Amino acid sequence: MTPDPGLASWLQLTLTPGLGAGTLRSMLRQFGLPQAIVEQKRSELSAYVPGAVLAALESQQVRDAVARALEWAAAPGHAIVTLADETYPRALLQTADPPALLYAVGRTELLRCPALAIVGSRNATAQGERNAESFAKALSDAGLTIVSGLALGIDAAAHRGGLAGPGATIAVLGTGIDVLYPRRNAELAAQIASRGLLLSEFALGTAPVAHNFPRRNRLLSGLAQGCLVVEAALASGSLITARAAADQGREVFAIPGSIHSPLSKGCHALIKSGAKLAESADDVLAELGGFRPSGFASTTAPRADAPDSGLLLHMGHDPVDVDSLCSRAGMSAEQVSSELLRLELDGRITSLPGGLYQRLEKGERR
Image (cartoon, rainbow, N blue to C red; front, side, top):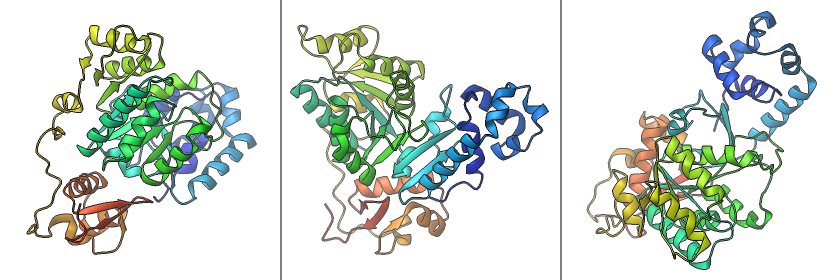
């Protein structure tokens, strides 16, 4: 992905200590893009931020942090997506406090795909993990990208299920994107970076500090059309994510369990307060329009006589990325991503590491 020419200005503002997201949005409304903000007279900016913040804006510390971020973004597979980018997830724009920018590793086109968050206990039961993985696989097969937080337990199982289907998965981190946490999920994180997407709003190097995870949770739920809680105790952080989803107008689902299990208490409390009871992936899909319930007759097998048309005509036979397809077909990234998802579900194409796609010959389709 080609960085925004004004990316350095976005980074300068977001990496300045004391310059909060709400203040930044007010300045963007007043002055326009970040380049225009940093070029303003300091007397104009003093109406929004105190002198100490203005001094920090021009500090060597901030300049060094910007340089590190730009160097990081230049690496293959890395991207920094700003509010001004077409790739920025539309779902987040509907929330009260969308991050000014997002650090990403992997398939940024997933940011514009329909998604469902799946969360739950870090200390999950074996059955809970199986439920999370099987639900995620079925929902990914139906065209939903699975969003979770890369934690142990339910999160990790949800990511594995998402990767097993064409919808793939997005892992939202509560650390800087260059900080691996928890370390036990290193192999899973590498798989997600290759076939899905790692995402963080936090600056490079941000450690796993407790108060960052509630912020991560509201981003996790904001990316999705709904949130499914698999197992959760009454004091679980997953309930914070579910409440954030409800506040953002998203659907909330919960899987019921034994009345004797502490890990069912949180799910039962959600159901009592209005969450949809989910006994199968079809219960989730039935509430979300435009998706094929997994129990219905499969439509993934291609018709042998289906003619090549639409986006297929522009793909050729070599691997190709979304940006190239946008240029060839004269379509937006959102239109291309939607069509690629349909073609993948129809068995006409396959996704490859690095955000590439390749058409399948008739004998290869599966």
